[in-house]
Structures are given as C-alpha cells and as structure tokens.
Amino acid sequence: MVEVPDEARRRLVARFGPEVSGWLDDVPGRVARLAHRWGLALDGTVLSGNSALVLPADRGVLKLHPDPTIAATEAAALEHWAGAPHVVDLLAHDDGALLLDRLRPGTALPAGTGVPALLPAVRDLWTADPVAPPDLPPLADRVAFWLGRVREQVVDDARVRARMPLEALDRGHAAATALAARPGHHGVVHGDLHPANVLAGPAGPVVIDPRPHVGDRTFDLVDLVLVDPPGRDAAVAALARALDGLDADLLHAWCRALAPATAVAALRTAPDAPRTAALVRSVQHPG
Image 1 (cartoon, one colour):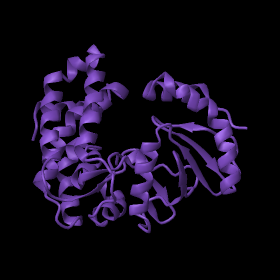
Image 2 (cartoon, one colour):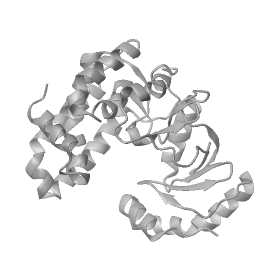
Image 3 (cartoon, one colour):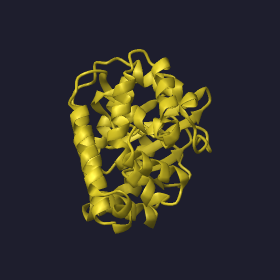
Image 4 (tube, one colour):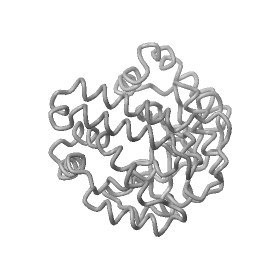
C-alpha cells in the first residue's frame, strides 16, 4: 500500500486548503483500485508537484489531481496533441487520474538548456491544430490566476518587494491582460512551458505537465526565452526563424509583461543568482 509523504501533504494542503485532507486519506485505496483496473505494478514511490501526486509504475506514470477539472483539461490537451512525437503520450484517464507514458529515470534536461535544444518540442505545440477542444478556459484566466498569486507573494515578502515593487508587477499584469485579449496565433496554450516541464526523451525533448488554456500561443515561449535574460534578443530571433508566423515584436512584448513575475519567482528561490539580477535589471530597464 502506498503512503503519501508528509511533505506531499503539506504542499497540496498549501495549494488547495485543508479540505484536500480527505482526498489525501483516500489516495492509498484509490491507487489500489486504479492499479488493478489498469494493470499497474507500482514501487511505492510517491512524488509531489504543486498540484498533483505522481506515482511511477511499470508501464507508465500515474498522476492524481485533487481537482478533477485540472486533470480533465490536461487530458484534453494531451489528446489534442496525440501523435506529436515531442509531447508525452496519455495512455488512459479517469476522474482526476491520468496514466502517462513513462520516460526513463533521470530524464530532466540540464539546467540552463536553451532554445535550440527545445525547438522540436516547441514546433509540435506551435504547429498543432489551432482548433482547440471545447471547455478549455481562456488564456486571460491563466494570466489572472498566475499573476494574482505572484502579487500575493510579493505583498507577503518585504525582501522581494524591495527589489521588485508592486508597481512594476501591476504594470506587467496590465500589459499581460491586454496581450491575452488580442487576436492572433490562437490555439491550445500549454500554459506552463518552462524548461523543467520539457524532459529528455529517447528521440529528443518531451513536453509534460500542461496547464492548458486557449489563446495566443506566443505566451508559451516566454519562459524559454527568459532562461537567459541577456540572450533574449538572440533567443527571440532563433524562434522567429524556426516558427512560421511568429511575431517577434509580440514575443518581446510578452517578455516585458511577464518579466516582473518571472523575476519574483527567481527572487524567492535564488535571490543572489546572476540570472535573478539580470531579470531584475530587465524590469528596471526594459528593452
């Protein structure tokens, strides 16, 4: 029988509130039922992200979401991208549970992996059918949720606020809201396409963990560009050459709008890193 580690409990309670405790208590029984139904052998390992539990199995990875709506939208996006060689395969899903194709252990891409190595995965998303499945939320919802949470973090942390004032964050939020309302490049937006959500697969990079919305797919490119803030111009130019129809000026505008929120994340996790300083400078002196 699997056991949910204390750290996983803390992370999910922090994300969903104390009402998630009942769901967590039912995880061992639920896993046993799903393992029987889908013919899985699990080794007992339980990993935790910010919004789900992940359990490696012999023929896949079992992912459990406390919020079945999040799981349903993830499944819809993966089904939309089915057959794309650089997007993880969805093997089965049911009411908050996803069974994903298992990548080999140790498949994280090296820290600082740049745009050229990620291009095969980015192309799969960029060239996908622009007609999105029904019931995916609009990109404006993602912008409002993410930037709203970032603002709460800044309000609660004077050290971060000293280097990234609320005024800069609010200007970025307003700009991102306006960009999300613009027409163009519409389709399924991954919604969380940072390098940690692109793994090394047997035939190249593999995208995982979408938080899908419908809107301007240019949004997905920002985290990849801002891996190296001083190299932003070169990264945007490389993407513009590789992706048919990409508006480089629009991508620069998204980068400027989201740089304050990206800088906040860096200030909270690596306040003294050179990349963090570069992100803060890019907000203070936008190009």
